[in-house]
Length: 573
Image 1 (tube, rainbow, N blue to C red):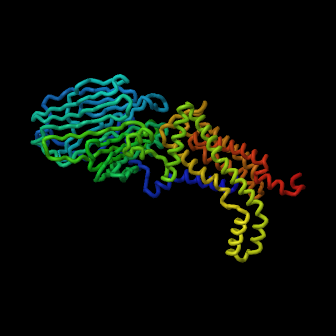
Image 2: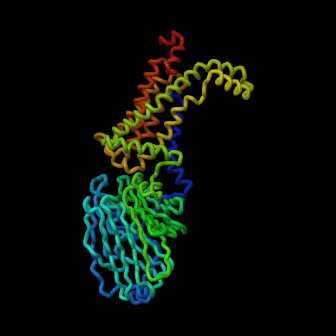
């Protein structure tokens, strides 16, 4: 590894390490402030979460409620709450007859690190899929709906099913929420219908709300919370809201962001999971994202918690009926699955900067397809690294020959520097002329690095954000390649291979310190990186060592030429 390569990778590592801090700096991101001691709330956030706010609602005395709502009033006899369970191949969902809303959503194919299937809805939070009429300050979750069945079990032979929640008011207004579920899809549909509305003014718009947020699911809670975002697709523009700040002197900070215009979908995300609302029958006229940040104490540990709720703003027209249809996706942030909907949902997958994104997509495609044949992602990474080394070998060979030619030109370049030391312009002109005569590209030695950098960065991005690599195990202690090596074996091996490679490569006494310094620096760069990335770079180092010995045997390595050029006495020493 030559000096330019070493310096370049130092820069890459520094960018990776400090980029999050840079983004926080330019976006004004701040940690939630700790509330005053006298207001400190001690709570287990898995059991209790402050209710989200989409639009501040007023307490209306019971005797005034009927006057405010008018004819849209349920019958005097309230129904007893029922829980309806939907069981599919991918999830188990529970709905309540209180508003006909979603109460629980458990994924069957994803588990917590300590075991157990993941529940996406926070315990103690409000139910989701609420409908709010702002003009009446009315939420449908205050009504008790009747349901046409007590559960639904879908399988290969019964792949689609529907559940209908119905409310009939005293005045004859009928409200229907009809859900359709699919055996092997994470999305389900909602048809919402109100009939006999001739005497009821509901205003000009209503909100379809995901009101519970999403629950943290990862062992590294801080990293998970750092990916709690709200997204909306307005026209062709993707809007992302990531920082819901807590105001000073406030125990719970609430902030809203809204937009008006053609809205194709809105979503709330964690690191690996998403809930998205997609209008089907017509386009939404806007969106609202409501975020909360607060601190809580679990045991002796103080933790920040976030809750981000999203809603679609739907226009209302005067008439005797209202009918809308929505698609609701609740599940993993899986690039291939989200892309299949062809509405831009895959854009919420963090695949790096725009220049890196094509590399990330290509690498993800290769890894996923190799994994279809080889069940172990660690072995897949090793095979992919070998493939990359084979692809880069012609460039490495060309780079090595370029460095050899550059080394042969060193005496002539030194003579030019001495001859034109007082004329920098002429020195530069003669140097370029020398390069041209010798057929040398001074940047030729950087070609492999130029192509390796986006691959390296794409790997880093993939292992931090893609759900395919979540909890992907390799061997023994490496149970999750998306997390760092818990006992640092891979970083040590990586640093050792780097030391060995530099020991046999670097011959310049001025660079001797790098033989010892660089492996140590890279160890500290990599020891908190995802283990999959460290595995890739370790295997790449080992293959580079083999390649170095091959070049030395063929007399094509700069260190061999330098060794041959030394005086005989120096070689004996």
